[in-house]
Length: 317
Image (cartoon, helix red, strand yellow):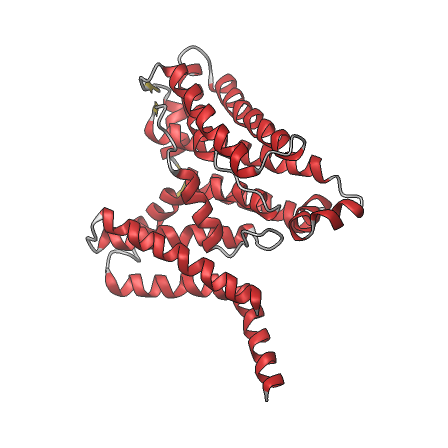
């Protein structure tokens, strides 16, 4: 009987790892539909997609890092420095100049994170915490603490326009998701990322250039932070040095809720996307039902704790 029970537990665990987070999203959507008759309207659903775009983009980059047993606490600040650079550069240059330079700055910061972690041996938590403060300081120095208005109409459309009836920020999020899924699922680099997270020493002995790949994942995280900054700046049409404060926690929450293990080696960007939607749907439902914004933070915190608990139990099983 014990053998049968163990077999059933193992089967349930496999099913949960594959579809559990999707099932949670479906149940949440059903509950939200009953709680508010405005939830299942097309404008509201498109609004959710628009609202989760920035955190979703950040979370996908964070997934790469966490899969290698790392963490990137600097993504919110890298978003912030890219936002003020877009705003400042657009005052005297075209989008063709401002956008590449803003993205490049965030990627260089990611490169510094990667070098510090992979070659200097600085723990990811400490290295990226330092970059969090450093990049935020640069944003304040660049702006003098004063927000920079963005008056470029075409740039404004990137964060507020529609394509085929879908918000452009949502299309950017889906494009990042598709490219990331292909990289992790169908390339040798993607398979190596999982190997590094599962057993770094074994991956190194197998010929995987562990340090190089670690640097690359932090560059990816920096690059998508700059892309998220692009959406942020175009949505608000202003470059403020406080842009992205606290977003690193939202990104980590989306990754964890989406089923990626904080111990590396297990997880998918599809799961991260669903985790982002779960948090977005929860926030939207609480708003529609009139729950106090401060109380909403309690729900988000409880959701993260429950997600980590469930993942830890399935890992043990």
